[in-house]
Structure formats: C-alpha cells, structure tokens
Length: 119
Image 1 (cartoon, rainbow, N blue to C red):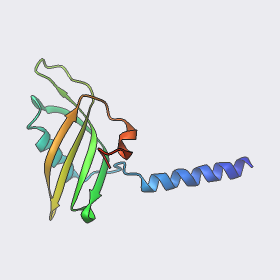
Image 2 (image 1 turned 120 degrees about the horizontal axis):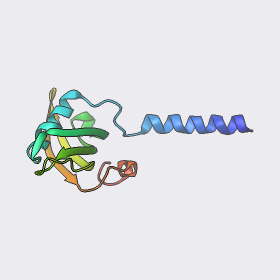
Image 3 (image 1 turned 60 degrees about the vertical axis):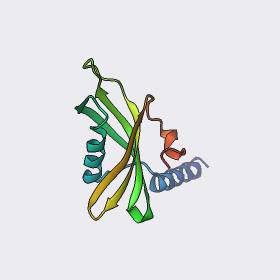
C-alpha cells in the first residue's frame, strides 16, 4: 500500500513539474531586455540582482509575462531586500521588447504563479 501511495505521489509531482509555469531556463535575450527596462527605474541599476521565477508565454511565444524578485541598492547605498517584479514583453524575431516593468514592495511567493499577476 505504501509503494502504491508513493508511486501516485511521484506521478502527481512529475505532472505538476511538467505543467508548471516556473522558469527552468530563461532566454538570455529576455533576461537582458528585462534588465535594460528595469534600469530605467533603479537608482543603481548595476547593483540589481534578479531571480526569474515564472515565465508565461502567449500567442505562441510572441508575447508573455515574466515574474520574479529583484534586490537593488537605494539612494543610501543599501540593498532594499527582495522585491517582487513583473514585466510584460513582446517578441519580434529573436529580440524582446519589454513593454512594462513594475516592482511591488513585497517578496515573491510561489502562490503568485497561479494568481492573476503571473498567469
């Protein structure tokens, strides 16, 4: 009975892993486009440390949302702590154009991946 329960749990976990929107590997061009757009909002954009957690693509990969966390320095030179960010983008050819970038003064929570912001 324990083996059957374990087998069912592993099957469910594998199914969730396959259908999960979590970013296993983000296209470096998309990462750079997000960093470039984010640089417009930070006092010290070179200090920004990003974690790309969720990528949701639409229109066959030609548009999407990316969510994660960012930690950057403020005007006093201190890091602000991890802040949730989300960005919308469109893809033209092999280039990405980030059309929106916003940070919120809260940490990224995995439950956001299924919420209205990241999905």
